[in-house]
Amino acid sequence: MIEVQRFPVQFTPAAIAELKRIEADITDHKVLRVGVKGGGCSGMTYVLEHDVPQENDLVFEIDGLPGVMNKAHELYLSGMTVEFEGGLNSRGFTFKNPNASSTCGCGTSFAV
Image 1 (cartoon, rainbow, N blue to C red):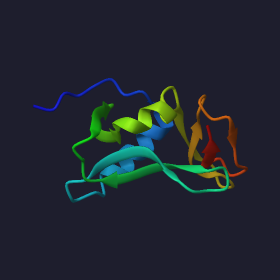
Image 2: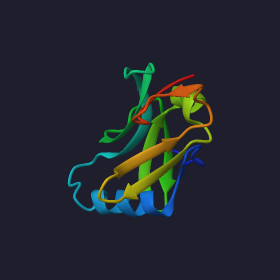
Image 3: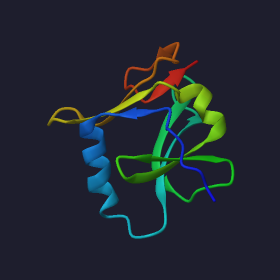
Image 4: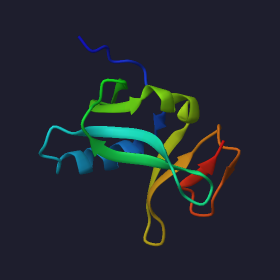
């Protein structure tokens, strides 16, 4: 049995609402994946996508939405807050990561 754990990343109410809106359009068996990958102008970029759970994933739930994160990514993301801005000039998810030593101008890339 997979144990659902407390997730180390927080989501604002606006981010949760947008995730639920997106989730309504997902028809396969993928769940929300939160993570990092190499790249971007600061060295690492955030991952926020729908994916198939893997064996080394931390399983979590955000306000009823299932999600996963590679256990190794917790080191980089613990304490991070994901927000959603729905304005005309600035629309999308933003990441506030206390573990980042520097970030790029667009806010999707960081260094630790």
